[in-house]
Image (tube, rainbow, N blue to C red; front, side, top):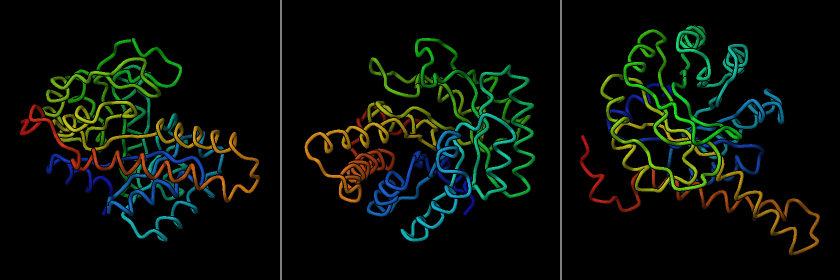
Length: 284
């Protein structure tokens, strides 16, 4: 199934899929193990920096081989592609989906750039994600406001033809200094004006009940990255501090197992396996 078809189905069902970034084989293995053990579909995301680290051919072959070995339903996606050229390279390499992030451009330029990627992706039948509004990236001001406006969404989707859209409703990338509060009313208003699948970036640290309510109000894809990096590295540091082991084959699995646990927990949230507060049930 194409990712855009999967997202359309999820929208109709008021459900969502987890999209996780991976950075090496160990984090990829952790994500796939969690998906396998919970019988969950998953989106596997690569950023420019991860592609630079592993190289595009190696990363694509590794993820394809791993997905086949685990036997799960999965898609490969470019996360926060910063240029049309990068998006094209990933599509040429066999990605199922790409994100073109021109959100810091003017609305007109964002539309123009995104439209170029959508047109190219049509050659492969691939899905395209874009971003509209200000979602703070690592190192950027999390207090800056730039929420997505529903009227802009309607125009943007109609003029670009994107399949999915990351919206700014109060989330941010990286760690939060205080508990985030998502603008649920804004999310509902956005859903009413578009058929595009809505995406929530920056899920690390957002309370479970808010994630579940966001799904009930229209979010179809939830991105997870920071918590994966953090738990892997913190576990690795602790293991190395406690012993003199030099065999990475004995050290890395402990960190990978922690990735499995955190992804399994997030998958349960996305699949509504955690108790849902009555306040978020049956939201229209």
